[in-house]
Length: 229
Image (cartoon, rainbow, N blue to C red; front, side, top):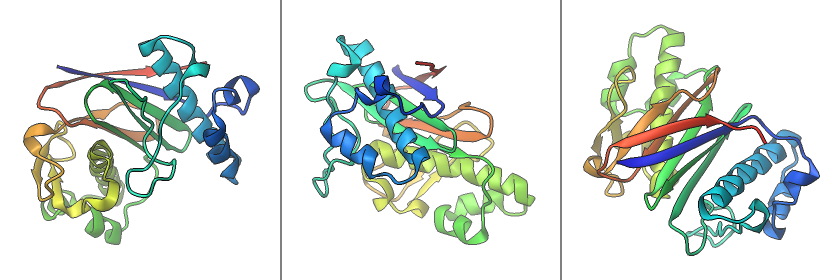
């Protein structure tokens, strides 16, 4: 059994007690955002990650240091890793919700999206496999959009788990129906093997859809927590 903890939070205020958790590189990324909401989302993700890491590994959140080096370009915008530790993390945010997923030793990916977005026909054709497109065909607009973002969050979650992101063609992976338990049923990309991929749709919060994935053969146990500092 693979245990995943997903911790949710609203955007935190830009307060000194939160800012002091950032190292110099993270402070630079924080200050590079022009919009206050983007700064707060980034800050919240780091506070969530460092607080949980300190709880898991011991010590204080202020002492946690991440390596976020991108494997492709070497810049510090990759997923946060704890050097020398087995803890795996994934951060996602959308609207007024920021989430963190954590596992021990298993690659994990989290995605959350606001549920009030539309699903234009061009987006459906771009993102969904033929089988998934057939599943949503004929649905009323609102139901089609809801079904689309079930698929979208599943796809984003598994791609984040691989660390390859959108390098995996969205149409190359097919999931179970949007109204069935989440399962990867087919993959045309070698980075994703259905036999070694597990995922779950999440409750998240009102107005949002979310999914979490792990690259494992074991069943998942997912605990969702709403966190307050």
